[in-house]
Image 1 (cartoon, rainbow, N blue to C red):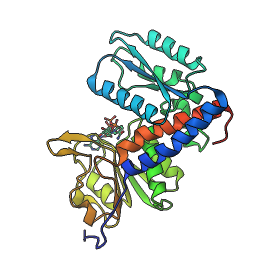
Image 2 (cartoon, rainbow, N blue to C red):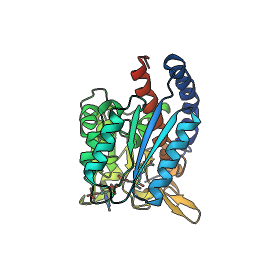
Image 3 (tube, helix red, strand yellow):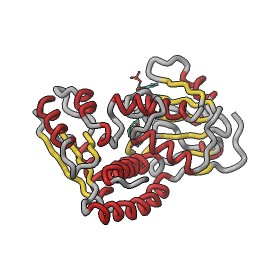
Image 4 (cartoon, helix red, strand yellow):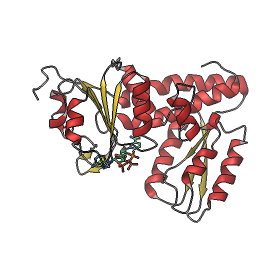
Length: 291
Ligand code: NAP
């Protein structure tokens, strides 16, 4: 590994999200004018996990910043799968609700997959249904899972060339690693997906023109593994006394990579922004407005 003489570009998700919010406010106004209805995201929080409650609050705040409503549904810890399915049916049938977000994780007794898949495709603005994932994978219209979709938006905004690149995604969760890999494949990358059973992780990362850390382990991916000139995308966030770290050791990466997402302020703001953007799109479709 030699160091990259040019300073890496910072992929500033915070700034981009702010910029996108301005255009979303104008689109929300246009929907209100045409329909006399305020676009609305329903958030469902089951149980009382404090981190989940914080995420739901942040999503509600983001709705308000662009002039949308958010309907907060809170259900007790002991909720059954049937009760949650019935609530999702109710929201699917409510014309005042344009998008539905079921906050993950739900309590263990609930069949989370069944509940995600009950969300109507046209309201699946968080991109969590199997049907939406399959359609996205096939290149058919569908709302993408918000974190990888936000990452794609950020890469496109910075004109990062993707076709023909070796992309290595570390992590294969349903909401992040798998859809990320599919989106990069659709963008003509050659994709490797690594996970907890992968042998020689360092060797895979060392080949990567684009590396995505989606693993949930603080700084698992070392700066020394990053190839010269690589694009480094870090989806992780782990609070520390000095702010926080991601899934990639970013210290020193600015002298190796050609571009990287900072932690915080890279991927995180793009995730919520994508949720709000996709809800606005759903409301535009319901209102017969061409995006
Ligand atoms: P997850 O469901 O826990 O999945 C973690 C993935 O990493 C799994 O596929 C796991 O492999 C793999 N893994 C774990 N240890 C590994 C190791 N030592 N070597 C290689 N792979 C390993 O996590 P997630 O929900 O995808 O989240 C991943 C990260 O993204 C977390 O840091 C999370 O906080 C962050 N995140 C951020 C946002 C955002 O808005 N910025 C949103 C969602 C998630 P197996 O499949 O083999 O178990």
